[in-house]
Image (cartoon, rainbow, N blue to C red; front, side, top):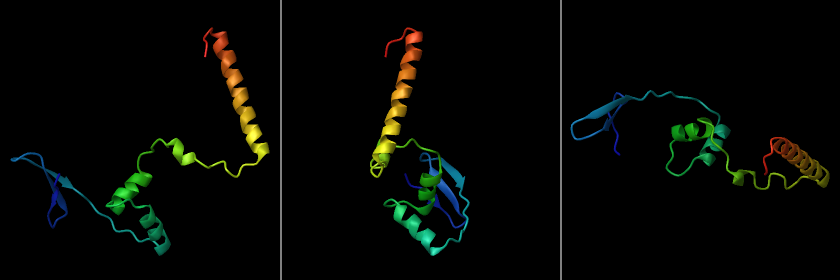
Length: 106
């Protein structure tokens, strides 16, 4: 879809041969330090504008993929791993007791 913009900053999006939708697209100029710019530039996806990147990074919260957690516990020692495993076991037993009380099988 083609969006036309004129010198006033008004964007025109064609809806059909005979209709256009006018969108007023305001802009702001921000000043950031070089290191912050480099961080943004590294995270930018191909063909993405900085505005699109900022919306992607800071816009609506998105559900995280389980892949984003891969390796998160790689440096965990055995003591911490056992504590997490024990917490999972306790939560599972508690859930099973609650389900059994309601006569639901898991």
